[in-house]
Amino acid sequence: MMIDQIIELAIGNGLWAVLFVFLFLYQIKDSTKREKKYIGLIDELSKNLGVVKKIDVQVAIVHSNVLSIKKLLCKKGGNK
Image (cartoon, rainbow, N blue to C red):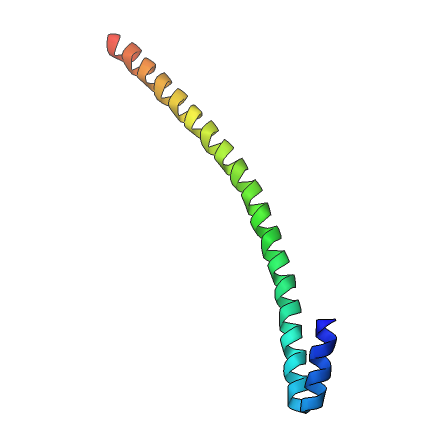
């Protein structure tokens, strides 16, 4: 495997090379975990955005209905 070859090469080049390779591989592994968390968060937020859009449409409908009722009430009040 490629990682084994890198480790063997690093061991042959000394302690600092081993430390560098270890930290490098640790960072890659950590980045992968973080990326999976971010992807999960983005998916969750995307789902919630759909709910927010539905609520926005419903609020717009209610707003339109309130304006219509207000118009009707103003017309009735003006006729008296």
